[in-house]
Length: 321
Image (cartoon, rainbow, N blue to C red; front, side, top):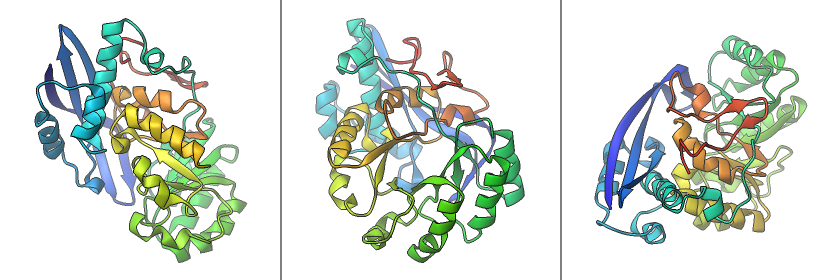
């Protein structure tokens, strides 16, 4: 088995800002696994928040043994970007070798389109209102917040898109006091979900706190081992393949989370259609789908995912799976 790792850069359609900083491009790693003349591929986005770099993730992948199965991979690498790209590449390889689609191999129904959130970058209230107005036709908008000046931004977005459903991602940027102060206004403005309002290491404050708007664990949830620590704090878990370490664990996390009474959100880092393709399987029936990465790019893979009024569609075999 031959594994190759290639860094790729995709320019963004516009500057993308969250509470931790801004970027103008998406830097990803493309992994190809070749065996017996067949090649499968996958993509990951190393994330500094989890102490990942392009170099460290490449080294993890290049340190793998010469041959292993997808099941063996789960114990060879920890949950994270490196395992994600290899896991997804192996799923793609298995599908091509079998002449079947990945969902058939996984025993899943054929996936359908899912309405996806569209993310508005953190900016001034005026500019965020303009972004909202430009995208007011979309059924679900996600707002990046997490600063001391969030209320004017939220009011502005609601004014710009009065009919759209709104979810908020605070990216660990609030304190318990700020969240408690904002909560009634979130209800007033029709916000349907708040992602990770508090830092992952300080979310004990959510226990016993009134949550009039469902609270979703993002940075606090990685794989199934995260679930016991989320009880009583969160209502929803955000499943991202770069956190779970691939489709294999993501599907198991979804099943376990639902069994524990959590709702499921399926999210993404900023990457190409190749990164989103496996996540469309996990997103089937999810309470919230947030797979808009390709919509934020100025350029994408060949045979990209289809986005239309029906949402994000599952991949064609020419892309993945």
